[in-house]
Length: 298
Image (cartoon, rainbow, N blue to C red; front, side, top):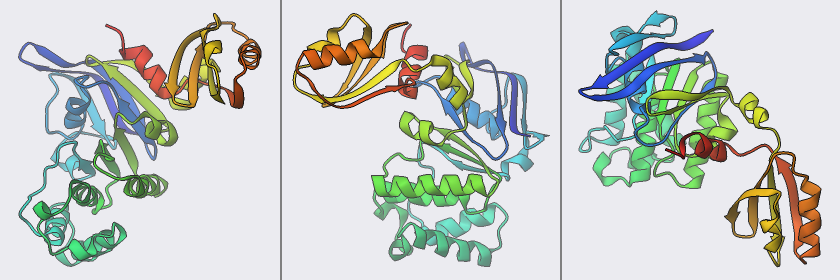
């Protein structure tokens, strides 16, 4: 049932250990979040899964077979840094990359036209890639990653440079791929996207796994310890001793409660302070807070 099985993998670059005895499993047909701060070893891990880098220790299996040149053809990859030929025409570039993945030229051309139309790039198909905006280039690179309908899709910061409309299109396509049976690995710093889309995650820091498993179960394990409050007026009630920390978003705040705190005491204090409450909700902690708790301290 695993699309990817990483067992005890270590990768060193001279004196630097980029990945340190890492193990993780990705279930077939799921959206999996590979998370971590900058320099945690995420990209190195992805490159080993794609057989671009060879691990110094451990083993990796992709779709029930050891990584190899053959498994590379089963993967669609969108790198964080753009790696396309900037002076090629857009449609010819997509057709060329589709052919490299085994499509006939006619089939690659047919699919390229469909994808470019879906991303509203048809009018730009004869332009050189260098003439497109960064957001448009990102859409072309996404098309190149999925045009051959791979059973495994690896997306490294896929929403970079995209406006909200196109980010929504990419999100919808990712879920379509999952529903069609593909496995999607998402590596991003946008925790809200991970929280809405991923079935399971692995959070790595300094090359090691610090949190791994079903995302719903991870969040439930923390319990409902976060208040989301939308209000106007005085905010002195946020200094209540039952509140451990506050994250402010203008008129909305997220307050992390101390263990055994009574949320009703916070509500009572807010009303007594004259605050006008329009939203008062007890939640599991957002993934962003869990991320900071796990990797935000030396």
